Amino acid sequence: MTSLPTGTSGAGREIGSLPQTPTVPSAPPRTRLRRPRWIARIREDVVTIFQRDPAARSLAEVLFCYPGLHAVLLHRVSHRLWRARWHFPARLLSHLARSLTGIEIHPGATIGRRFFIDHGLGVVIGETAEIGDDVTLYQGVTLGGTSLERKKRHPTLGDGVIVGAGASVLGAVRVGNHARIGAGAIVVKDVPEAATVVGLAGRILEKHVPGHAPVTARLSESRGDHDVRVLELLMEKVEILESRMVDGELSAHEKRNLQESIFAEGDGI
Image (cartoon, rainbow, N blue to C red; front, side, top):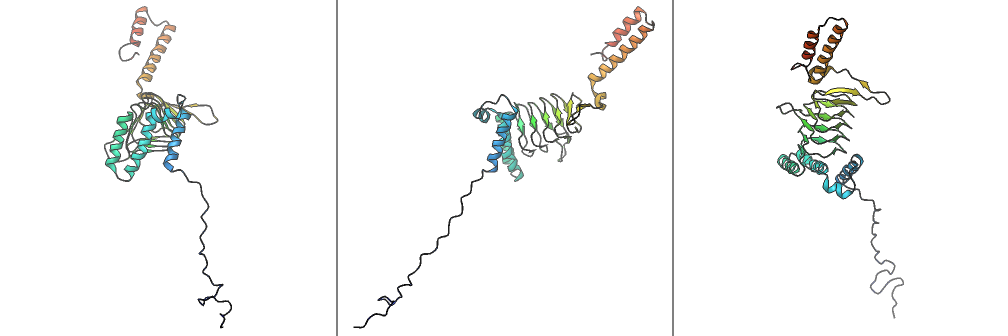
């Protein structure tokens, strides 16, 4: 009987040369998923409301009852459409946002982070407006243009600016970082950093310098402020009256006429 060769099988293959199992690559280490940027921005806007509005009491209240938040979120979407040159969808979304919130923000406006619109009704922000981070606007604020040309014609607000209710900032002016614009003010000139602006003529009252006491600014614009001019004329006439009374130059008739002229139409309050 013929024996099979040692170390082989009946099929003629070597016993030790069986096919090996293919190597399976190890799975990569699991990494924590990052939240999309837009979710982080929404969360940031919500946190901003809690920080700046003491009336905010719950997350549900902020998400469903704050038109300023709705306007900002819808603007962020319409602005992306505008930058992608989908102008009509961007304008349509902006129009719907205005109908829903009473706040009109042109989709071309550039708005920074942590932007807060309190109350919001009547706020208007033009196409070429630029708003920095941490800016707060109250109801009735207008960031409007003064030109009919297609160029930069709306304001630029720096970081940390606060604009009071009913104020208007008009034209391609710049409002410096951390400036404050009082309620009802009309601003048509540049505002320096950390300044406070009040009045119809947009007079700069004072400038806050960190570590220093407020410094009263020279009110060069006061010449155009009717109320200030009226007070100046009134004070001048009072000084004339007092000086002449001290000198004994006025008769009773003259005193009466001078007093009446102080409050004459056009000069009085």
